[in-house]
Image 1: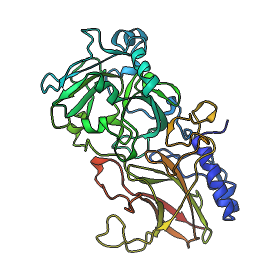
Image 2: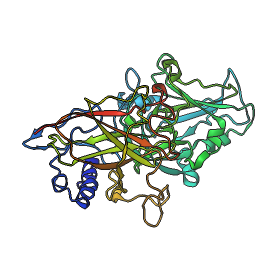
Image 3: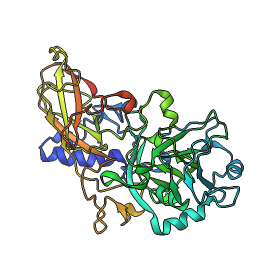
Image 4: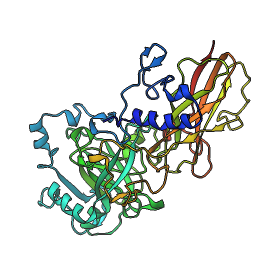
Length: 420
């Protein structure tokens, strides 16, 4: 079935350009400049470009980009070693205990020593009553292109916190995954207890995830169980979860803090191009397409701006706020979601209409969308194309958080040559 992300992008943009009467674009003779930001472009074939092999809208598990840590990588361990260290559904156990250094007061710690640690059947039992599922793009803090988008399913972390019967002095939740029991390799993260117990701004809950796109979470994706924090970058969604500490410490302990990263930054909204004509003729309309990541602040517009390299750029305007941006068209939801059984959204998925399986709002926060635009023809010359987003509060990319260490939001630029 032709249900990959690029095919859907082609179909959406084809229909858009056909409505505008752009026959050449409708035949996709311009397709594409590059597969994704940072990826090598496809090989040319005559005047056409062969489409690259991109993932479906919802990414199959084996198509997610991987930025895992560890030597060796935990998912690369032999099966017998995985069973030994609890990285299979049959042997997984999770401790939820008080931090010995800054203890929270709890009545019922879940420990391996006492035989009370949570096992996988116990987690599924909780899931019978409490499981949730939601769509989310997984994105690395320092990488522009999303690693993949999926429907993540699991049990809210707060259900485990309540099992320990906390009483007082609980300010944060620390958690880490298996990394060869090597303190030097331990990858850890944390959340304030209020984010665990409540879901602000209509966000889904933080979950212990055991399924992705309706299938058991594979080892390479952090299985059997990982944390998933809906609004956060990937480093908050720790893989191969093995231990949770309830602590009275007031500050974060995240591994990423040691890399000068903002450990509390939420997903940002930004735009990137997917296709630009390979050969731009003078005075002919220029079809442009791309995608946008929809961060915590939502998305209201995608805009583009093309400037002659011979023109003087505005002084002291590093974010191009005074440039003559024009609106692109945000395209509708795809007809083919991909990576899901029978292409159907399960009825209880947060953010989707249970009757129709369509998104309740579009664009959906924490995911991505397609966009397209038709630029007027240009005289011969060298040009720079830029794209940006306007978030749901009317703030233009890269603001409101333009700092690299709080997540990618740089305005992308693409070189274009117009010649006969």
